Image (cartoon, rainbow, N blue to C red):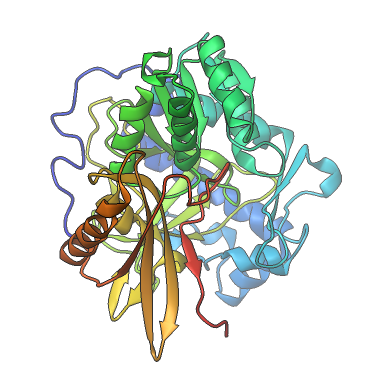
Length: 448
């Protein structure tokens, strides 16, 4: 990826969008933000060093003490933390507080091994609710709005994160969670929800079910959608906005750092404001670990600045993105994270070409006759990896048009992404729908 363009940073974007939940914090000068970050970074390193044996051992090995942090650039001297650290110290070995002092535990599904367990003090929960409320307000949610929350509740952080934030903002929460999509459509209409919170793939599933029922959600009260928990493209954004009649806003977070609300787009939709008073963001070369210049693509690394129970030092998110500190039309001064291209571990190398599923999605979604549902099937053929794309046609497309649809996909993937793929065209509804995070890749390559 090259340098950031004018369009990407939102210069010349629609004026307005100046509603703040925390005006003073959201519009701090860059200098005051940096001073606040330094103070909080020193406290975070002290908390980690004093209370987490793994952090203390790594800092000692690197010859660094908490009192050695005198500038924000000193963060680059700290060792990285990775997801396997939490699994290796399952369940509570990364906590800086005894379990008895916590207010809540969350955990990943653990489908690839032991789950990732995260903990929160009461203060951490309050901070999370506040940042989610700030994110919702930046996206256009207001006091008194009905918020239809279709993120999953339970150990997944999405549902409760959005729930607490909406309540903190003063909105009216409908805690639906995932599933029972027909009922969700009815509740959206009957309760006159103005806001929808869901994964982007499930938002499309809601739209699809509504259309089958003859219900036009573009004429409902829906006006704002906050979608996250999985990578999604601008093409997907346009599809969601057209079929639901709302402004689709990107929200970002991960359980290891806090949950949803680490960053969120404002109403300008020109990148996600990373809340720098609570998090320190870096972008590094994923191979060398060295920082890249602002505007260049790399792996996002986050250090928490206010977390009590689970301080994270230079956590490698594996998410590939770019950042900019250029001014935003909304007036907020916090840097912006540009759309996540994908994850390091989601990247496919197809005959020497690096490919993210989101690049495929950008080509597929919105093409004539193709529904916005797809899967990539990766196989090993000889010594080379091969990817096939399974796509669905839209309702009403005749079977004798499937060959032309496949040829169209093959041509545009080759010309826009640079790889040759197989294409399998399926009937409407044949690709599995997800109530949470969509499964975009089926990897059939031999393990090990």
